[in-house]
Image (cartoon, rainbow, N blue to C red):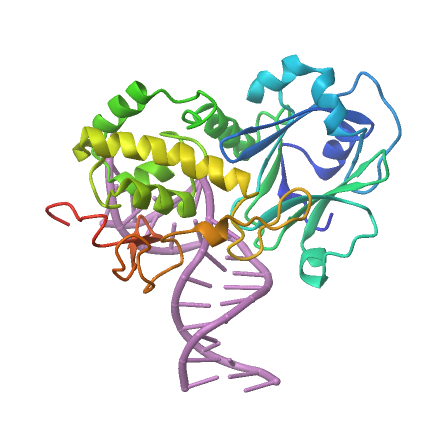
Length: 294
DNA sequence: CTTATTACCTGGCAGC
DNA sequence: TGCTGCCAGGTAATAA
């Protein structure tokens, strides 16, 4: 591990000691955070370098179901990939190419001989050791962020009535609100744009101004877009790969994101790009009509 | 309090 | 071939 900054809440040495010989007893997700639970009770083998973790998560999931549901409270490690992070399980000899090799910041050595590599070319992501130093402000912030996450749009985390009420209470424009992880957890820039297109809502619409039908369409769109994207193993606009190193194919299904100037799939009007909340925002000016005043 | 901008980093790509 | 400038999956800090 070249740079200790990627691990928050512990020094690289402390982190290694914490994970070495431990078993990954749970694997979960909350919003955009990946959550790992460790079980130190049955120590086995040893890792090297960045740390070692024993056994495979697949079997562990069944072994301790209680921990799985107890999301952040029970988790020991949280990983946020931010823009360009990748977490890849692979055989140790696998060559990911010079760029990703240069940006492999943490490597877990599993006891089946395989590796779990944290790769991040842009260095934005972090590995948080949650039981770590309470005086570390970065860890504190992460814990606060984690506990302040809004509901999951899927998996029964968000009721329609609740969503509608919370939308109505917000004066903010809808796109930044969708990106606000404390409002709803898990939507990023790509999916926010796709959701708004499907719902026929302009990104600048004040959240409270959405009609009942628009709000309902947006609620449905969030759940559908996420479900479809997960089904397609994600959106590899550029270089995203999943845990198995595979690219996702949802990029082929994108209707507005990254399609500036191309015809709207519904009406043929060229897709427009604007900057909203500092993010590239793609929409159909015809299907998503602008609110009264901009 | 809310909202806009900047900072964090590196790399890919279009255009010259 | 370079080189330049722009853009990028996110969010926290800072400014207004």
